[in-house]
Amino acid sequence: MIEVRELKKSFGERVILDQVSLTVPQGTVCGILGPSGSGKSTLLRCVNFLESFEAGEIIIDGEPVGYRSVEGRREPLPRKTIARMRSQCCMVFQQFNLFAHMTALENVSIALIKVRKMPKRSALEAAEGLLGKVGLTHRKDAYPAFLSGGEQQRVAIARALAMQPKVLLLDEVTSALDPERSAEVLDVIADLSREGMTMMMVTHQVHFAREICNQIIFMDGGVIVERGDSSMITDPSSDRLKSFLRHLRLV
Amino acid sequence: MLAEMPNLVPILLSGMQATLILALSTILIGTCVGTVLGCLAVWGGAIIRILLYALVTIARGVPLVVQVFAVFFVLPVYGIQFSAMTSAAIALSVFASLTIMEIVRAGIKAVSHEQYQAALSLGFSFRDALMSIVFPQALRIMIPGLVNQGVFLVKATSVVSLFGVTEFMFVAKEQIERTLLGFEIMAVVWIMYTLICFPLTQLGRTLEARLNVRGAAQAAS
Ligand SMILES: Nc1ncnc2c1ncn2[C@@H]1O[C@H](COP(=O)(O)OP(=O)(O)OP(=O)(O)O)[C@@H](O)[C@H]1O
Ligand SMILES: [Mg+2]
Image 1 (spheres, each protein chain N blue to C red):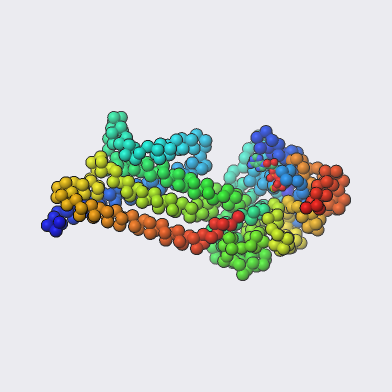
Image 2: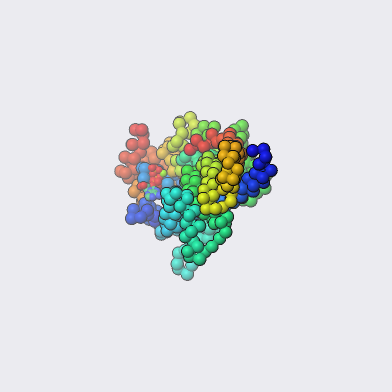
């Protein structure tokens, strides 16, 4: 479903991602671990094409992300194609980023109206259904400022699901939440994985990752240091991952 | 005063009319052009941004009288000649556009970049992201500044009386000199300017209050 090949990305002189390759088959969850600054968010942002990249390619469901090659030359895809690709591969952010001037219901329905050009009435109906799915029907008229962090993040997930994306990108979606709020969000994610949603998930919650991820990738300094299935967390092979996991347990 | 009323009222009204036309056109043009320039100041290239920054620095730094003077007396030197009223409208509109540009620019900047990115991530086009996500939030931030600027512009129209434009202030001065009813006419001038500006401030307050019901949302993230 997602295919990343020899991805390279730098900010100015600094190389942030180097030769990153990975495959996420349909219906599986890929967990991404790594210390701060290792390029995890940047990787997800490239897949969503919120960042450009200099070399390599990303392919989602057979379609290239961001660039195509015309007679051997690499050129950016038309804006429309980029927007369409983004809408099939939605991102959920650490800081929720709900639209502050809209209610929960409006947050979930707006993209259906603006991007999918759905009539307002059916968009609102669909949005209600999705809020129900994340257990927030009773909060549909609340503005983000009046929602708890966990509620905001569940609305944000519903907002992404509204697009019926082929892929969901989750960037430390529980890092800003206390354990209780974080659990309610993780429940939603676990449900999604059971329903067969393809996901890439950056997280520091190794236990959760071990439970739901089919594959885990450990990044450091912009490269993939170790990869494997979820047993990697209990049985790491590289020293770098061992010390990283020891660190996580301490905090 | 009473004896003079039949003469005074039509003259003052015509001056009033000129002031209103000047103020409205200035605010209208200033808001439209200012909005476009504000967007350019955020998303335009480096050269455009530097140019606009230079222009707004001049517009804010140079006294308004001097700016109006430039349009009235410097442009004709280059063979560009307009009627007094048009010159006044041009001078004030340029000033309005540049100052409103700053308000729009700051308003857009104050909406966090993440809001825009979240919209893009859902597949919004640039235009839709601006229209449904960035602008509505920027507007709420901009309202007090816009209302202030609107009121300032209404009052600023009086500057052009110095250049012989027969707006409210100009005819009022003329009538004072003619009738020597200094106190009475000045009182009328005070009241009329206040009356024009009142709806503006009121509109600002209403909008602010209405947006603020939802405005607590601002704190999010
Ligand atoms: N817009 C940018 N301009 C310059 N450097 C950037 C930019 N965005 C990220 N970086 C740098 O890229 C590196 C990787 O950032 P990234 O956010 O991907 O790390 P991360 O693994 O997500 O870290 P964290 O766990 O703290 O979120 C960091 O060193 C960061 O400073
Ligand atoms: Mg990150």
